[in-house]
Image (cartoon, rainbow, N blue to C red; front, side, top):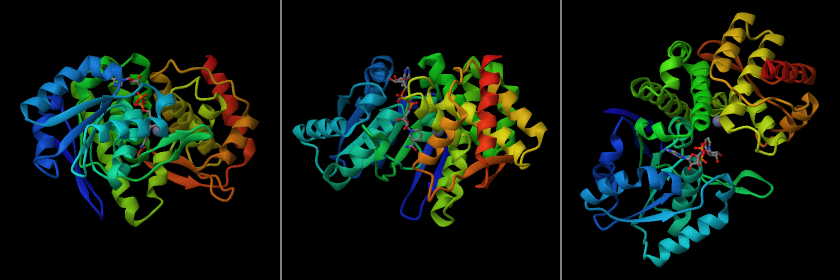
Length: 366
Ligand SMILES: NC(=O)c1ccc[n+]([C@@H]2O[C@H](COP(=O)([O-])OP(=O)(O)OC[C@H]3O[C@@H](n4cnc5c(N)ncnc54)[C@H](O)[C@@H]3O)[C@@H](O)[C@H]2O)c1
Ligand SMILES: [Zn+2]
């Protein structure tokens, strides 16, 4: 079994990545529960429940776990405090106490929301992640950030609450809608560019297999990404700032999402364009060689189609200034230096950003 340990000062926990691990979830979770009387509350959404619910139920039942399934409405719009409160009411009505455990069984929306619920229910109960989207397996389920949206903006309420364990089963991804799956692959490309040359080469060379969802290659890339995120999160506890590299492609990516009211791009797709833009910006400020930029752009485009970019460069510049990651007006760009290595740079002129957005217009139409 492929196990990665997230080593934090306060707690360490394992991430398991393995095909078919869903069938062992009951056995694995039961070993980690705070008490033999602990009751489990599985938070999930209808699509996941109908496709994979039986498999999870069988596994929890055969491990003799006491569990309740709590379904929440699907989609980013349900990631609100109102949903957290209504789930907490349902837990309380079922008699959940301090020994309860919350199990997130879904994508990043379920993971972020269930994590928030677990972090505040009776001031905090155990939490397990069974991520079911590629984005959640490579990113959202790791690192302990929880959150819900306010009407004013995304993820404005949040806590840190580390899971007791993360169980990632690549088989679950065989039922993901194609667009969701490909969107997740851009986050894999990101992990390669920031920290792992080999992983980036796999993304270049194994495109066909990945798009065909070959389970062996998927297991490998998910494992690599989980390891990279675990390393960065653990190191960041000591030398804060390393976590910033995870933001590669996200400065422009977030701005593109916000500028289209979160309706035009999936998050990963916006990150795909954001990485292409960062590569071109890197070239303009002489941190990235033209060859490297070309390689990154080609790799992104190889996983297209991507939605067209129509935003005005000036609007993107304004959005970047308003981003919650922009501290005291300084915009930190993560720029590629070589495959597997990036640098943080905060002196990118607005005109360079505007040019890069212009190039995205062109790339996205040809
Ligand atoms: N906490 C973090 O560090 C972190 C990091 C990145 C993203 N996020 C958050 O993650 C969220 C996005 O997550 P997401 O992309 O997983 O979206 P999502 O959770 O909305 O899932 C996407 C869609 O896929 C469906 N689905 C899930 N698993 C499936 C499966 N196995 N088969 C078929 N359909 C399935 C879902 O029902 C949903 O309709 C955002 O809210 C974002 O803020 C959090
Ligand atoms: Zn992301």
